[in-house]
Image 1 (spheres, one colour):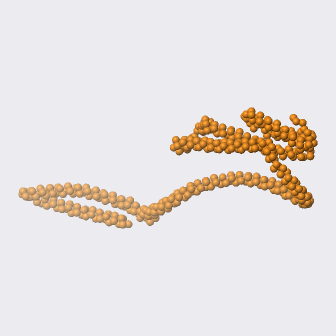
Image 2 (cartoon, rainbow, N blue to C red):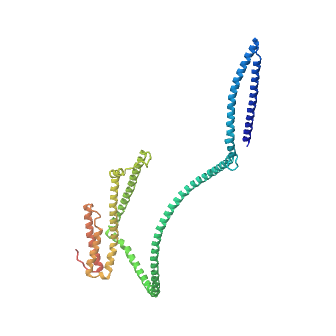
Length: 417
């Protein structure tokens, strides 16, 4: 409204100025006509008059030129004013009316657009906020999706494990059913055994009485066994009669010392060999600057070392000597025991009633000779010939003495072989 009022005031002022110009132009034209009349009335031929008339004519001419130009400009201004009036009446006023319309005018639309702009800005801010929230939700959704994927894999694993466990549970249930059947069967058997135990209890009570009687008999047998034990202690008399038990025992003790010596050599040699291998391994690590991960160790090198090492051969020699000494020690231990128990076996066999007959005497003699043969058998094949001859002579002398002893005990005469 303020712009429209200022435009009307300027238009009115322009009309007023144009009217003033027209009035002044009319006054100027009237003054020019009066000047022409005055010049026509003054026809003086004096120099001053001529000079004045010349000046006046020049002024009138210039004034007419100015008036002509002014007319041109006035016509232009009139045309422009007409155009402005036409623009004002035909275009500006309808446009102002459209602009000033409260419903469809430009101001109303401008106001609506301003409101719409404000709403768009508010919507933009809210959309930006919502976009940030949506972005945040999307990030959380991705995290949730990953978590859900992890949970889904875990659920699948749990499902697979549960399926496997269900299969195992079914197997366990079947096994439990079988065990239940076995337990039921065992329970029935226990009931039967309980009944049998009640029956056996009576039998046990009867056997208890019998066992008491047998216990008394065992006491008697124990007293007899003590007597036999005293007879067993007399076994050492065979060593005094033959003189060989002491020799066997000395030989066994000597072999025991040798056995311990070879065992110590094997132990110390093994320690030396193990120490050498460890030193080689440590030296190889030192050459590799203690880097185990980036280097490999040649096992064939250690195998070739073990094959070519004299320590291994010495260890093998000590082991073989240990084994041979162990065998000899066991043989001499057996021979010592057999030599110490041979007399007692003779007494038991000769004092038994069933061996007092003549046909049993030869069997006793064969048994005793076989025992002595085992005693004096060579422990190894490398003994010299003198030891073999000595053992044979001892065997012959012991055989004669055994025949004489058996003859005295049994009261029978036996032919010498």
